[in-house]
Image (cartoon, rainbow, N blue to C red; front, top):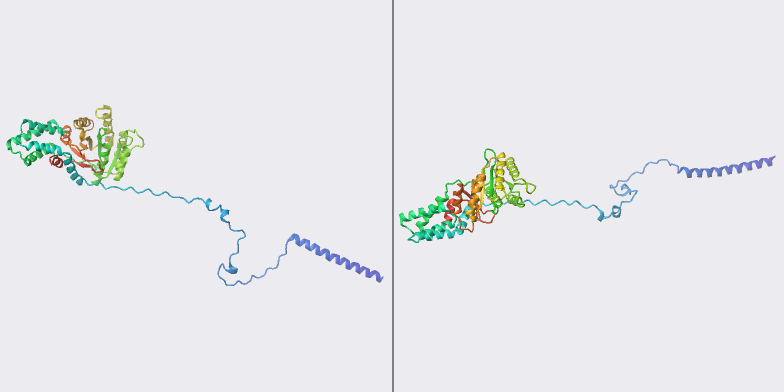
Length: 403
């Protein structure tokens, strides 16, 4: 009996050992599936007083590494920096020469160009013993200067009368007679001012006309310089729409002195419409004067002259025209007089501009064209320079002829 009891305890001990082993294996399996067991929280350690970002307080490294240049695509693949365009240079505005200075050059240049006329007359009149042949030479000299038959006849008769009465033929005396009679023919009493001031709250309107080749567009540009020098606010109208470069040329002239140019966007536009727009723009800008350039036209072409009349009528729907300037080539002589007559009939010319007065002894055209139209020569062109257009001065002109 005792032996049986001993074997039973032996079996119980073996069973308990097996259970212990099985429990350990089971616990290991459970830990492998459920992860580690959490430990009890503990108080954080006391931080040392250190500088920020140094030691234990330094920022912990990132979990992911910083991207390299290669990761970003490299320097060469970065988008290019925006390049801003350079600002356009500010155009230089010229200050034209004052008209007073031009008058001095007028006399000097006319004296050089008309030396032949003055010397010939003085030589003939002061040599004494004037016979009919000598007086015929005086007439021929005056006619060659484009003085015209009527004016030549008047001048010769006046001189013959003085020589007969006075009997003096010394050069100083003859020069005085000649100056007096020429001044009478040129007529200094004529109003040679240019309409360039506002009238009744609107700009003055100046229409510039003439045949091809007289330098009309250039004259308009130079006239703008004359008026700017007089502190006038000017607007240009490019109504010469048939010559391709005319509007560009006029705009260049205006740009040099800060004057705006009203023009069409296309070649061959209606010139009357452009002229109308220019006058309207001048009124809106409160300008002092609007200068309208027109296409050159042959005086013997009826259709072209009728078109010029249309331009004038369309402008007058917007504003009265205060001045019509006819540009003539001083070297054309009697042909220029015929041109002046036809233009005068078409558009009521109020003043003459004589170009190419330098280098010519045709100064007599001043007298003949004034007589033909009954209007004054107001401006003369003396050369190719931008300020070689000058207001006409009767006394300076006569003095230049006989100087």
